[in-house]
Amino acid sequence: MLTAQRRWNWPLSFTASSVRRGLCSRRLSPWVLLLLLVLGVAVQTFIAQQARVLKLMGLQHSRSSNNEHNLFPTLHNMSAHLYSVSSTTLKKGWMQREEHANPHHRIEGQGESGDHLPLKNMEKNNIKLPLSSKTGTGEVSPGKLFLPDERDEPRRAPPNATCHPKSHIVFLKTHKTASSSILNILYRYGESRNLTFALPLNKHSQLFYPHFFSAHFVEGVSSGRLRDVHILCNHMRFKKSELAKVMPEDAIYFSILRHPVDMMESIFTYYRSIPAFRKTRSLDDFLDSCREKYEPSLSNNHYAHNVLAFDFGFDNNAADGAEDLAERAATAITAIQREFHLVLISDYFEESMVLLKHALCWSTEDIVSFRLNSRSHQTRHRVSPDTAEKIKRWNALDWRIYQHFNTTFWHKVDNVVGRETMKREISQLRQLQAKLANICLKGGGAVDPSKVKETGFKPFQYGAAVIQGYNLNSHLDTQTRRKCQRLITPELQYTNHLYRQQFPEEAARIRQAAKTAAPKGRAS
Image (tube, rainbow, N blue to C red; front, side):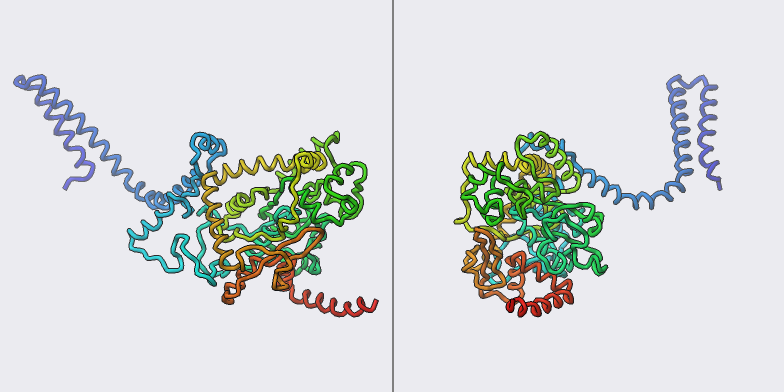
């Protein structure tokens, strides 16, 4: 039996001897000799290749398992690369085609092109969906409500299938910016998942605003009882160094702004009793005399001047014409960009909620809400163009901050979501909100406070504003009623509810102290 080496060498020897015999024979033509020579070279090349294959077989076998192992990480990296599209590319794509949408939304289960792909794969593989996970909007029967409250119920896919829902959150709750509706969203999300809130000390409703935030303002911090905080979202004056003592390093910081003209009109109505507004006949009257009569040192007068800048922790006493206005505005904008992952715009509340949904990797059910702490139409006043210009000049610092972040907001919409996807997700949000209103709300909408039947749902009234509330439908079952209640519970009542859940002993102590002090108060 031939060895492997001899098995590959004997054809070469045979060919060489055949060539030598052919060369010695005069009867063979030159063409035959040339053919034999080419054949010999081809055989020799083939033998050399086979030898190399045999030599490498052992090495290739040892590598094969490693290649299989690396295949899925490679595919994952490829998909991650596809998702990390630069903002420049997205902008060019938007200009070239209005229908452009960010690629990662095609796997969300909400886009037109991606909606039917999972179902086709399931049908092909003979997979049947359980009844509770049917897709499509469908009709919701009255009295039954599906919300993400139960920890074991199925969840819809988040905006990006590769991201994970964020639960470490800091929300700077600004004034008269629809921030109470966002607070309700955060409260419902945290409560349904048993997350821990950084709540105000001694059952206060705010974190000792207007003082700069301090860690000891949070219940349980000084005593050491509070650990692993998830969400901080009550009114405060921002101070990052103190927040870092309470919140995890990976916390997402976000806030919301409102156009300073609309915001000032709302503030003037709501805070009518503060010293700056108390003796003025109208908003125009205040704006015409504010440069001479405004006293920044008086209590609560900060509401009347650049209150956005104040909430973010900056000196708010700057008006149009100040020598250092541009420098102060640039400093504030730079600091906000550095400290906050996202700044929303309440003038585009639905777009803001969709953008927040993507930033936190939440679902549409997580960010749906009803308007809370909102005024009735009879206490809203139209602002003339002349008055609007006065407000912009008086609140020049807020105006510059707003202009900058209104621009960056739309950059984020284009780069993170895409206009077409944004339209589609706003439509989905509206449909869900309409269904919930039909299920939960008597009359389908808000009513004036005098018409709110249950005391626990009556919103706090302040100033000249008429803050509306809601009544629930009477036919709701127990579970649905509880879920609807969370959607309409005003800020103060919901904060008290969470405080009693997290700190039952402290809540009982405060309640007993109030009872003890009540007779003394009446006697005096």
